Image (cartoon, rainbow, N blue to C red):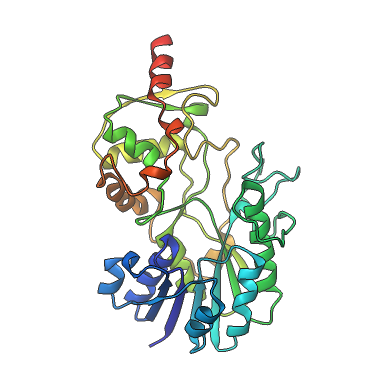
Length: 334
């Protein structure tokens, strides 16, 4: 039975990967600081939880010291995070680390977190230009996140170990800390009779189902090598598509108000021009998605709606995203 260690295994990407591998016959250990966050589905699948802090050198050594066929790291954000892995990879068959499309820049140097949106005329390939790396570890900012991810990627890829970097985009699934779909789910729960969509709902930002990312991890696990792969869903829904999917899943009907400019009606996928990732390289290795966006997001929508008005992420919600008074004023003025 092959063995896998998932660092950050109780988070969105980690839990999906652990469940995928466990149900495929792997012996899986996940790490996390809080055993109470261990999903029941993982325990039932035979996954073992080990209490461990990813940034505690002794704890990391204890987890990785016994070796594994696969190590998947969902918590590698900085160059120091990457360096801390390297001493322990000699006994590991393959390593997969998650990165982000936030590393990509367009011809003008703009990235997804720039004040001005980037313009990618074609699906973005893995050999596209990236941000210059930042080595300071300050990744909790719009400018620092992508730069520190680039630095982490370089440390891993320039090592002597076979590491696959997976660049994900707008990850969705059950267990998200703050699901983006909440933007529409809450409006359904609040029985809003109209949904406003900026830029006529045509914006798009390629989503990645955690389940689809996990499927790609399983593909590359027996194929050790140093590479970068985009990981995303097989389709690229627009904001209008996603509003319709949420409403359909929850049995709600509303009027779609297509706003010409950017306000009101902002939503998390209001990216114009939109961004699509090229999946040619992943498909070439045998990646087969679990399903398209509509199929893979349905459980997450139902899960988010199950919490009603007081979800676990309530304190993290930006209430400006739910300015119903402004929306109603716009509707009255039409």
